[in-house]
Image (cartoon, rainbow, N blue to C red; front, side, top):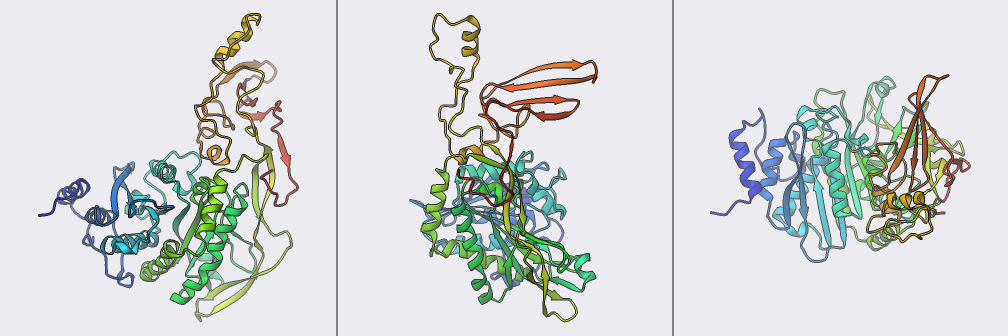
Length: 498
């Protein structure tokens, strides 16, 4: 009798002692995606992952636990040896968006049964169900009522913390965030149309990122249509907005609080895939098989297509060595500077035919404001010596105390954009968020103005000349010697490599 892995033993014991939900399927998947008619439950997925753990190149582990005690599973698949291309797939940040997870489970089933499905040279990491609490409840948010795809800056939830731990460990050159978007909705129905594409995709787009990495991601987006058209699916670049022709359209948001650009901060190619689901129908999962199959076309293409892999890897490696720019954008948006009108494809509900509606599409990413980067070329003030440095005996006692109280830099000081963005120190400060080393110290002095009758607190950072005044619950940034005040850059796309 074969010996079970520890994960398989624990999962089988759990399934034996915990009743399965009504209607749950066995721990197997259909032979082909067209046979999928219902989403895989958490318990069924756990049993399936336990059954393939240790088969071929697959290893399954538990990366974290949710607020309700469910496991966030991590699957690592590699043939061993040197695997120069690292890929991260993660799905179901939103619990009611299931197609990406089903496609990933089918991919894992195929790799376990036919290891050659995973191409050589691929180091594959998969988080198939990032929000199991929301998945079991059928809700977008997790058990703490938090939208995980808006938690990538503060990272308060265990689910987003687990994702970023994996991203830092794997350092993927390519990552994909799997979602679904609503095809119908009240506004579209009122105009007698639904969204036309079966599946959409977009790449990372924050203006701070290296232009070569953004261009490499856009090449994948632009060339995906041929494979999907051959497979019988309608494809378009992902856009959001109102209903054409009256409302504006734009591409995926450039903010870094969502997975697309948050994982892109690790300087790899990052993508979001959204398949189209109809919510305003009796059975939203009636076309689940088609959505899963369309997902499979895109996901497997990322693994098998090597036509420009060398160029992608070179762009990522260069971006990870890129120095900090002179300016950091603080306000960026999609604009339509030429006031151009674009044709948007929709599908008529009554006829089922494609309709072309004109719309104003904002397709140029623009940084409208930026701040001078305080870390460019230095990490500590030059006027104060570092800890451990010798001081002259003629120096005053005050200067010597300042020298002893300063903070030594971390053992490895990096001035790269990658390490600056990967640090979470800017999001968790006892004083106030500001760009500085994780070991900086801030001093505070509090006073109350008689006329205002409100406390006034002044924070001063010894490491980067950052200062902040907080009075009556409002924060006001003060000019500093680093000259980090807001600097407009002309309301146009600007090369921030500076």
